[in-house]
Amino acid sequence: MCIVTSKKKSKQNIRRFLVDTNLFIAAIKNPKKETTSLKLLLDLIDNINISLIGNEFLIMEMKKYAQIFESKQGKEILKKLIDNTEVLDVDEKFLRLCKLYFPEDELIDIYHAATCLQHNGVLITNDRHFDKINDEKIIEVLSISKAIEEFEI
Image (tube, rainbow, N blue to C red; front, side, top):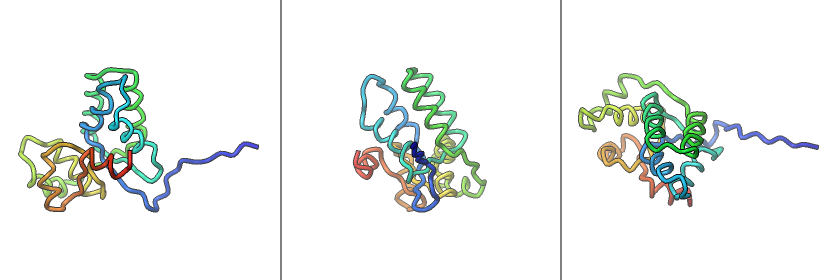
């Protein structure tokens, strides 16, 4: 008898995360080394209690860095990330609100913050541009090391 289990994510108790590109880069830049960042990223992808969210700019950035740090493992992780990330649109009002917390030339960071705000996501990043919006409790931001600690990696 064969028992089939489903990794289908129920809506109950699901946390939503947006993985910034600096975690992706930390995970793929040294393909021969299994870093803690890589373990975190794979846990986020595989954890049935986590839903990954993103936007078109996040996917575009990750594809760019997968080419820069080209490796078989990087391509596989990128595919898993894209397959497991819900790419969401962002309403203009959330962009306008988040724009107040960033330098004007940080459009992609504004999109990431607005995606988290609109869709109740937690941002995982080491980018200091998000400190102000986190300090003001507009969105929740976890550093990579804090996420590693929280997920007991």
